[in-house]
Length: 93
Image 1 (tube, rainbow, N blue to C red):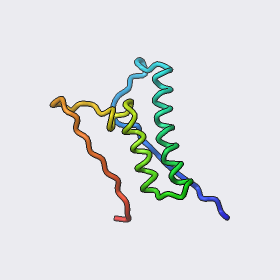
Image 2: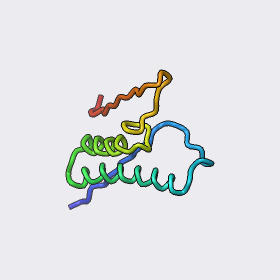
Image 3: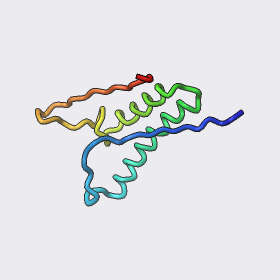
Image 4: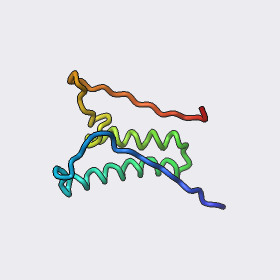
């Protein structure tokens, strides 16, 4: 049986992180959070789940991590409020 190749890409959010303010511990925390999101999505795929379910699992992991500008880590908008939305597109169109 031919082994399936898996590809999964994530993005930790928009914003500016100055290298001068990044400690080794903080960088490791960011890398760990990103790796966790990849692992969550990968686990879905190797278990035979759909790409859609894998994306959802990876996004949930990012949203549950306060380090990222999504979900629990969302920054405030100009009006001092959280303004969040999310979407996943599936299909050829």
